[in-house]
Image (cartoon, rainbow, N blue to C red; front, side):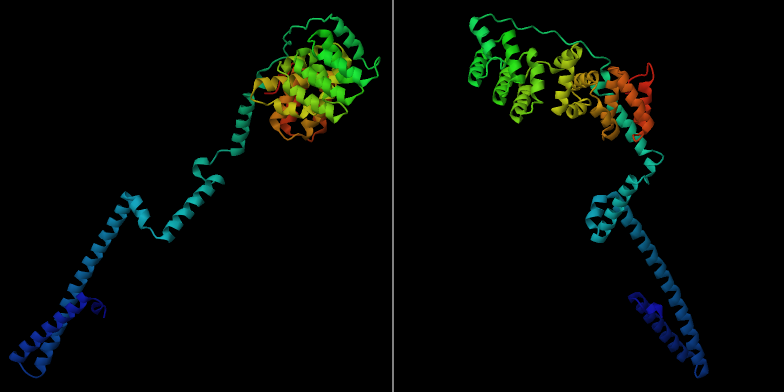
Amino acid sequence: MKILNSPKSAILAGTVLILASETLAQGADSSSGGSLLWVFLVGLIVALAIGAVVTWKFNQKDAERENQGQSGDKESASSNPGERASDSSPSRRGSSKQAEEARMNESLNGANPSLQGIDLDDVKVKMEKIRFERLPINRIEELRSPRPFTALPPGEEEELLKALEESDVEFVEDEEVRDAALDVLAGSRTRNSVDAIAQMAIYDISATLRSKAVGILADIDHESVFESVILSCADPSREVRAAGAKALFKLSFNRTDAWLRLFECEDTYRISQAAKAAIEADFVGRSLERLVHKDVAYASEALALIALLIKAGETDELLDYLVRGEKRDVKLALLRVFRIVESEEVVGKLKEIAETGGISEEIIEEVRKLTENGAPAPA
């Protein structure tokens, strides 16, 4: 029987036996024989019934106390989350961590109710557009005129005039004589001495003298030396190219103005030579990247150089980037340059690119806008 499964049940059973004994004793005093047995059975039944009722009452009270204790534990746990965490078993802590990871995965996969209805890809595209619109290149509406600079004075010293003659490779074959003349020219910061040094940097047959002349031009650090330094960066000799790159780094004047002066030059040969030198020296790739630079100085210089390439007709590398380039911002910035620097040749090639395809719909749409008369620059 279930009433014997606890100390309380044993006590109740003992009580029942005592009651039964008392009933039996009372029955023995009052009667004999069969009546005694009947009285005993009736007393036993009554005692068992009383014991059953009492047991049921005790079990009901125990259940109520257990329910109250469980609800109290829950309230305590909710009011003291830190204490509950410290008392949690490792398995329970592990379950909580797994539940948290599941919630994070739901958020990332779009299952989070707070993110439902939001196109994350669309948000990303809009943020990229906003970031691009804030770049300095989008604040440049046209090519500005280069700022003027102070020209060097002419030199008329007799020693200088003699050095000018001896520096010309067409008249002096002796390299040592030309080298000595170069030293004299280096000590005279004049217009004609710079012109003579620039000629040696480009045309002297000795790579050593060309390299030395480029270094002297960098030391002079005047706006008039820029074109010769650019040409030296595409020299056949590695020694001269290295000297040109070093010289370009040392120049302290505004290179944007220097590129713009070349752009405004009416000498198509000089423009073509400078553009080809920039391509051979790998300036184009770096300039494309700098179009989207956050520093307006870098973006302006890149714009000036690319404008020179467009004017010279050297646009293959630029157009190739529109098709094969990876960076969306650079493509949009390049299209903006094409809008600023108008070129019928470029417009014709852009139409071919749009018809051929192979580029994103966004770029095709911007190309179509650009090729229309009066279309705004992409932004």
